[in-house]
Length: 113
Length: 119
Figure 1 (tube, each protein chain N blue to C red):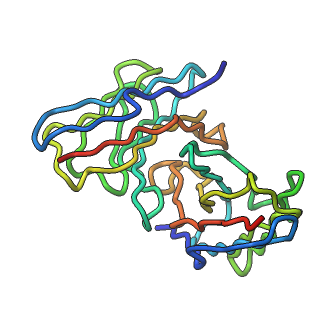
Figure 2: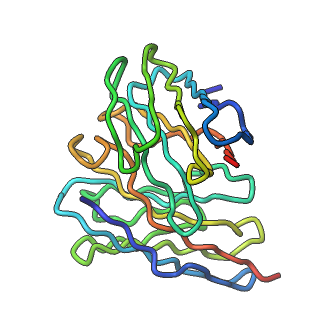
Figure 3: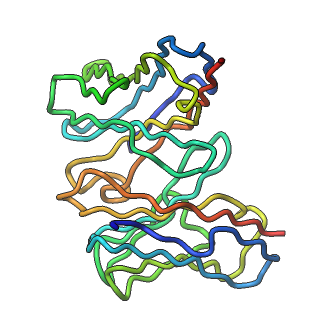
């Protein structure tokens, strides 16, 4: 089954404790992206990747890092989480320029206390 | 940069009636895609319908249809015969077709409309 998976689905952590949210897709998509969703703000792009080893900032990159060492994986790293990073996070993938639709993962609910 | 505006934070409709959700966008590009996504309480993002800007014909998917007005930069979603399962957040989204848009093909979302279905 074609899908985007994220882990963990739920995470409660404390300020400053490094964490990684994994994202994996099995559709051989070149393009992958991370979004955060906050009430009243919709979804905003954090980082994106056009292909392996090619990443760039989206609209709200501060406090986040990403890497793209393999085509299927695109982890989101919070080196020192803060309470303002409490949010719902989505990973998405698509075929890039050739693909219209972005496929979304199930979301990760992160709470930073 | 592109912007997407949904001016209705919340809408309510009686079951079996028709409801229209509004969306406007701002762009200087001529080639792009527009989408409506549904987010039920499960939080999964579900694609409802999409529209290619170069197509004049409005997209339709069963009970869901759009009214795409390119000159007015308007993209509304009409849900006919509303069902209880339609209750969700609905997001309008824009994506450049050129590969040079924001986030190099990333989606720009509106803030969403919460749709309530009254039984």
